[in-house]
Image (cartoon, rainbow, N blue to C red; front, side, top):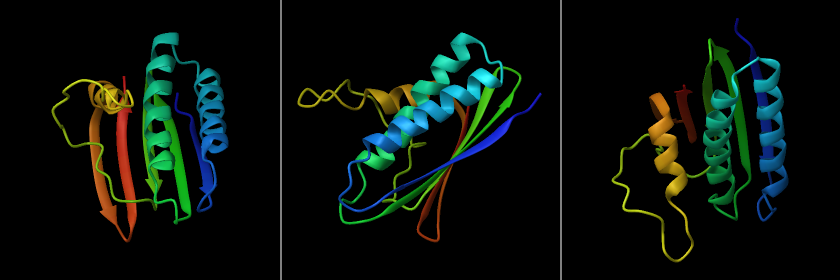
Length: 137
C-alpha cells in the first residue's frame, strides 16, 4: 500500500529555522506511523529526513528566503523521499570520503549516514532549485 504526503516550509531570511525543522520531523513521524512502517524503517527514515531538511535550513544563505517541499511516499517497508528547495546549491548524493566528525563542531556525520542509508539517490539543480530523491530501506 502506498501513502503519499507533502510538507512545505518557508523560512524567511534571518529567521531561526528550528521551528520548521521540528514541524517537518513531526510531519514525518506522523506520516510513517500512519503508513504502518516498522520501527527500524521509521527510525532510519527520520534520521535521514531530519538531517537533509535541517541541513537545507541551517546552512542556507542568511540573507535569502527558503521555500522547501518534502514529499514522502511508502512502498513495502521503504520510504521514498523527494526534497525540493530553492536554497544554495548542494549535492548530497556526492559520495565524498568521510574522515570522521568535525572536531570543532561535531558535524559531518549526518551526511555520511544519509549516504549509507539512502539508495537510488538522484540530485539535480534546475531553475535555481535543488531536487533530491532517494529511498530509505
